[in-house]
Image (tube, rainbow, N blue to C red):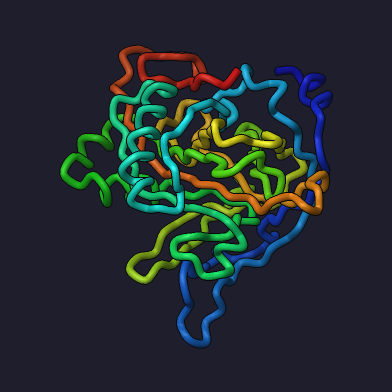
Amino acid sequence: MDNNTVQGLPHVEATLNYLAEGTERPVSYAYTSPSGTPPTTRRNSPHPVTIRNARPILSQLSLDQHGFVLTRQDSKVTNFYNEQEVREVYYPEVERLLKEVTGAVKVVIFDHVVRCAPKARQGAHGVREPARLVHNDYSFKSAPRRVRDHVPAEAEELLKHRFAEINVWRAIRGPIQESPLALCDARSIAPQDVVTSDLVYPDRVGEVYRFTYNPAHCWYYFPHLEPSEVVLLKCYDSQDDGRARFTAHTAFEDPTSPPEAAPRESIEVRALVFFAPETKDAEPGTATASGTTARAAT
């Protein structure tokens, strides 16, 4: 799309929490930190940005160019806070969706997170608050490690071919007005913006990416998301040929959100997506047998 189209999109102005310049490799604890240890060494640096409404350009969005798309899928889940129902009903739905949209030959769903700030503050099991910092869930090191963790018997063979880690984000109740999700156009992120960060769990140390501010970053969102709408967000792609390999995202405070807006309730599913070996070279961002382009909602 041309620059005039982007500049002409409806937009909001909001403040996003970037990583402060000069921060050494940050360390954060996913759960309770050891006694006397701060929960994070990360230093935030808030910056005002323009976040554009991506709905008018749905048909132009691509997982391999922008790093995210919006599609549609109804779900038969009746209670997204019921972990068993999510695993038994929703995981197969997401697997079918990812195969349909990306052309993947194998999908392994390994995790999900439900978010609702009031429930999280009340201590509801497995519920977290929206994440209000600019980040990406995996690094070039941690994403392949997920394959070895979750598909150990097939890992070495699977790692010889293209795979991706895709987050599948859905509203539990809609429309989403409070703490919507901002998504950065992957093409606007420079290598020097990316900072590897350690995320410490009780049994392992993961790696994620944080981002320093760059005025070139181009941010989008999908206002008033409904439960029938699904955001696919690429957090890693093993193919290094010019396509988007990851992008940044964060919750943000929408200045147009009414004071009485219901708290955001959402679920994100994390999946490893495996593609058949490429049979020929293809232009990045075009549809191939391995499904490099996702179908956008219309």
